[in-house]
Amino acid sequence: MPTPSRHAPQKIVLAYSGGLDTSVILRWLKEEYQCPVIAFCADLGQGEDLKAVKHKALAVGASKVYVDDLREEFVKRYVFPLLRANAVYENGYLLGTSIARPLIAKRQIEIAQKEGADTVSHGATGKGNDQVRFELTYAALAPNIRVIAPWREWSLRSRQDLVAYARKHRIPIPVTKAKPYSMDLNLFHVSYEGGVLEDPWIEPPANLFRLTTNPERAPNKPQTLEIRFERGDPVAVNGQRMSPSTLLAHLNHIGGKHGVGRLDIVENRFIGIKSRGVYETPGGTILHVARRGLESITLDREVLHLRESLIPRYAELVYNGFWFAPEREMLQIAFDHIQQDVTGTVRIKVYKGSCIVTGRRSSRSLYDQRLATFEEGEGFDPRDAGGFIRLHALRLAIQQSRKRIG
Image (cartoon, rainbow, N blue to C red; front, side, top):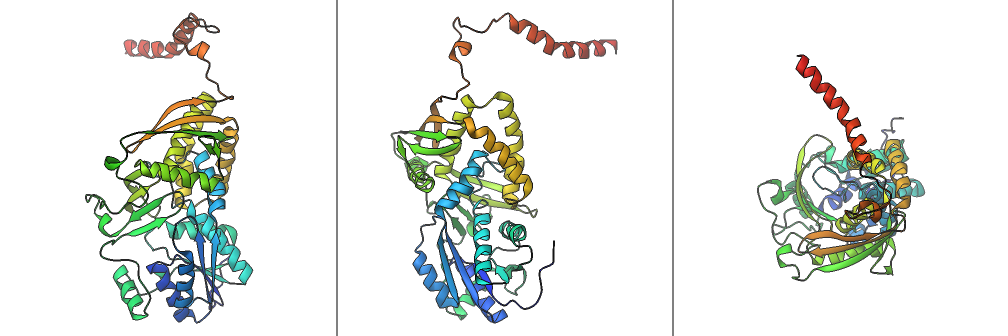
């Protein structure tokens, strides 16, 4: 890969959220490099006042601000392919932050090319996964672009240093003693880490959760949903067709009301550090469970088992930032191919944090009740099972014979 030029940057595009880190970074870049800094904020459904984010970026020193609505693209081209792969990292993480970074970085590169910028920057720390996800995407799409990662370059070493810097430069700061943790929110999930959560023994504060009701306080009556899938993608809920982002937002509301989708894990970061993360993925959890219910009647056994063996590798690639790598794209093609028959309807019951499949049907079903029945059925002769068992038992008998010989 060509080495990016090390000359002083002429124009920088910063992935900007409006939070403490990127606001300090915006001012620091202006002072350090004395060049225009363009702020780019991606609307992925985080529910913030993005007009206020734009005004803040301009006030802090941005020469120009892009605020792009990427919600439909995010769900259709990133979340849905991820769900078609049934991707789960380690102990249940559905990759809500991991899948957002490639889209943000891709759009950032597009803006840099449009604006004639030679440099991009991000607010990821030197200990986290996001720095890898951003920079692998930059390398895949624009290998010659320069990257400035302030957390690896400046003298600021802690969030306390950033707070002091922000106060010195009169930058409004959102982090308070009442909520001393980092939060990342998009249409697929919300994640929390750092601060009070760094001790894995400490239970997350009750006021931490944004999307989900405490399951103990969720409605006492379950709610039933029927989700329609076509060729692997959800298209309707209870008979009402919706766009990808609208459908996910709708399921977030329902799942959140019933406390579905909470997760508290200690995960292994790509760079080798263990990290405690708390997540809420209500709509994503419902879709994950529903698709598995439909796949159980539409996918061939060997295809399903082979796919299951490949899921950890796919999830690891996404988690580690290799969304635009050829091996991830290869697996995606295979996973998408087998989803062509995943068409049908799944009935789901949500209740106090649980999400259970209670029915599934499909015109593409491989399930044959005449074969499965314990009553007298057609098309299957139980006597055939004897030879089947003897063939599989043969090698076990040979193994036992060798043990007797000694």
